[in-house]
Image (cartoon, rainbow, N blue to C red; front, side):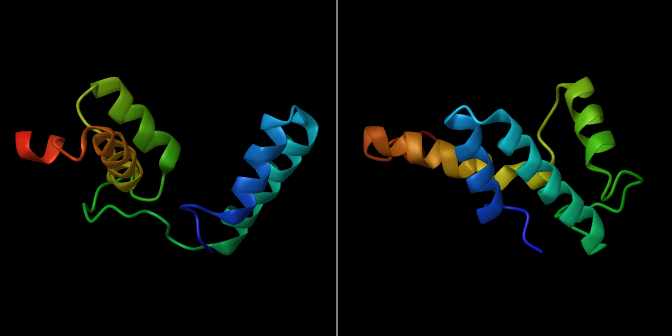
Amino acid sequence: MIIDKNPDMKVCLEAYERGDIQEGRRLLQAFLDEVEASGQDHCTCDEPCKWHGKCKECIIQHRGGDDHLPKCLHNMINERIMALSKLTEGSLKNML
């Protein structure tokens, strides 16, 4: 099962955007149920910590520490920053 950029979640978000909250929630629950039922380890972090694979606890401790993002969010955030950087012809990379 794929979590990142899951096509089912795209459909879910489209339902929310068109105002069909009930359908959006149904699709979201179906997605979460599928993730749970898969039994897969979806955690992308290499750090062997006690929160590995426990998304809720991991996010809470990262938010509480206000320090950095969990590894699972790095690609998503970096892709969005890259897209914004293209507005200035990618000149952000010259500043890094």
